[in-house]
Length: 197
Image 1 (cartoon, one colour):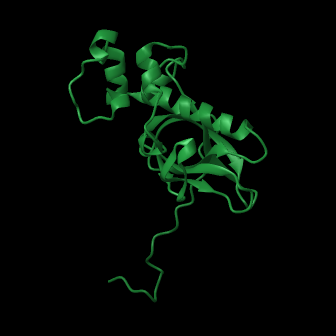
Image 2 (cartoon, helix red, strand yellow):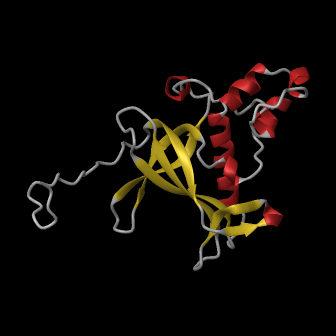
Image 3 (cartoon, helix red, strand yellow):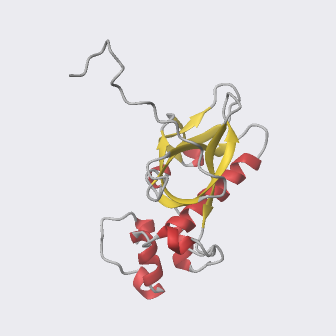
C-alpha cells in the first residue's frame, strides 16, 4: 500500500545526464503558446511570446526525442521572431524554421523547384506545432550554470546521416517529392493544408 507519509518505498529520482553535444535525433517540436499576436507580421493564434523585460518576441519550443537511446527526453529552446536590438535574432529564427521545414519534408536546401518553394510556406505557426524533424543536440548553460541540451539546428537531407535518422518522409514531403508541376495544380482534396498538397 502506498502512503503519503512514508517515502522509503518510493522510486529514486531520475537523474539524466545531458545528451552528448552533436548527437543527431529525431524530435517532435511543440510550441508553448505565449498569447502574443501581431497580424501584420503573420503572428496569429497566440503562439508567439513577448518578453516583458526585453520586448523581444519568440516561439517557446519544446523538443521531445522520438526514438533511440534518448527517446522521450525533452529539450527547450526559443526561436527568435523579433528583437528591438536589430534583425539578427529574427534572421536566425527564420533560418532555423526553414531548416525545420527542409528536414521535416525531406527537402534538399538547394532545391528551388516550385514544389519545394511551396513546401517551405506555412499558413501560420500552428503548422509548426507538432512538426517532426532531425535535430542536432547542442549545449547551453541553464540559470544555475549547469549544462543543458538545446536545439538550434535542423539536419537536412544533404547530411549523410539524415536518412538513417529521419526514417520515412512525412506525408507532406512524400507528396512534394512525388508530384510533378502538372499534378500539383490538380490534386484532389486530402484534408491536408494547401501547402502540403
